[in-house]
Length: 513
Image 1 (tube, rainbow, N blue to C red):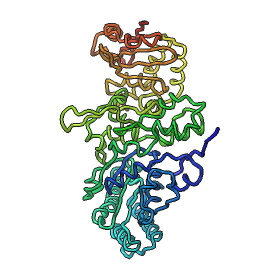
Image 2: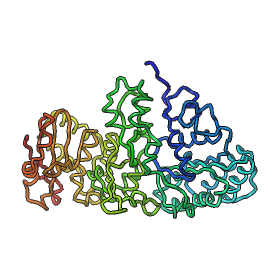
Image 3: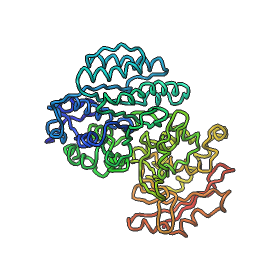
């Protein structure tokens, strides 16, 4: 195919991309804006989103590697006659499960940076050596220093399930980062990147001039690929792939600006030519799944979760909000933002795309009592056959198969939403087009599923709260089907009623609208 280049899957070296015949999406307009607007920045993005490549691009820019920037936006906007010294630290490699290992790692990195910059360090403490490194690099090179720190939070996140160790590591990193405050006379630029956003008080004490650009509209697309990037830079890779499916499966990550794709997904799709959950499969969110189950989270709510701004940033070792964890790790993204009263910002979060919705719900199934893949495969066959009697029996069998001990030992089973959570997550795990609480002018239907040329509208009720027969009745009285008639597909109304006491479906009624 004419114009095809190498796919930079996993490549974090700007020089390798620019000299090795790889595709490159020009992010230097964002870098230029950073340099024009300030000096101290913090950026949070999920894993595998291009943060390391962004830092390496800055590294090569500050070292004035002009040939690498030929043809890019910033080439004519930068003084290439003034290379600046760069201190580059990163915590992406290895696992440090204690303060001694963290301190050793930091000392090793400081030694490496000192050798690269041609300076000697005489201090012995981490704080003293870091400050000395910055000061001596400024003196040695006659230019202020750029400090770039990658995966600033990874040592803590790797140990987040052990509060004592995580706290110990947080204090160790705080000891390092606090140096930046007094190093201001020697710094020209500073950027810290990571997945989570720890409070300034807990990790960046005194560093009040650090601007958080995580939710800045100007930098929403600083990492990731836009629709335009796919249609221009990656145009040679698109033939043979369904363009609409690419968007449905992989686009949708939003930080209060233009939605973007995760680069890891896009590059592996172009390489393998198959739609698969590449990003999700690259790491198992075990801690997240465990936390959602323990907090009895109503899984259909994940696609319409409302959160004030402060909760999105409420992340610390001993205080992790569900909203912050889901948002910062990339499993939910911004769908809507409003200011209902002055200065109070309310965000509606939802799944960024089909990959995350299907994969996260698949991961949640064992916590909901579905430990094997067999029920999911069976559900797919039942829906393909459009067999409603088999669909009713399938879900009744699921609930009947859960032993009584499971209800006693699993916190999520204590919540009323458990029944609808099983229903929703089981279907969503198939990667189908599922919409929860789909609004019309008469109300909101609990769940709509569009699959195999059929529309299924579900309403769920708990009979201890309402008399039997109300689920299907509401579907008809509210005329929920009217919104879908323009699609010209068969529409099925399905009322499902659960009994909390019997732990089972007690009514499963269907009519074709």
